[in-house]
Length: 196
Image 1 (spheres, rainbow, N blue to C red):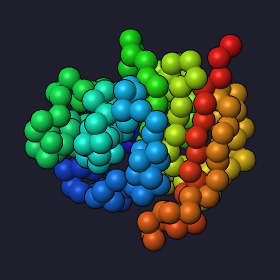
Image 2: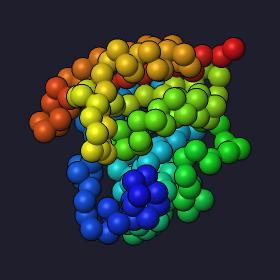
Image 3: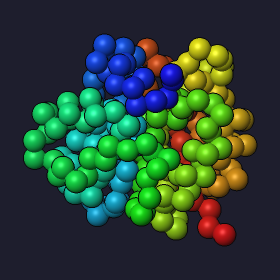
Image 4: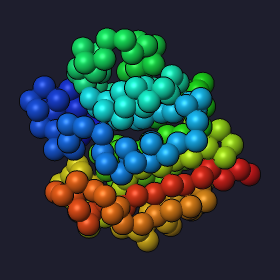
């Protein structure tokens, strides 16, 4: 069944990983390179093979956490990054994560992998995991939302309607530096947590 641990284990074992580009996504790399501090506590949910996680750690961000529901990519990450702190790799369902707060959460092909009926729950959970004035940033796909995913698409208006209930929209625009196969189909965003 889509979305389960078994589903994602099977996708990784059989290398059905169209979302895995083998490196840090260019828009996220550029964003990471401009971070104001290495002291931030950062989460990468649905981290997969963890290219963003390892890049952040190499840049001196010591409090970066990679979360995935599947042990398979986390095992790959451990092999590739033997010096990374084991306790900062979280084998968990994102929606079950409790007791942690982050300054920044990076979105990279996690949102599009979730069943569309979980999008409201995703936005609420992201808001709850961020500290006051925390940031959710990353990439969202900009193509029609159709059956048959993942990946599941969406558009700027739908994303604005969903996330503006929980976040101040600081940026939501076409990514100018996507890799060629994704050119024109990614939106780069920066959302700041709204506090009540």
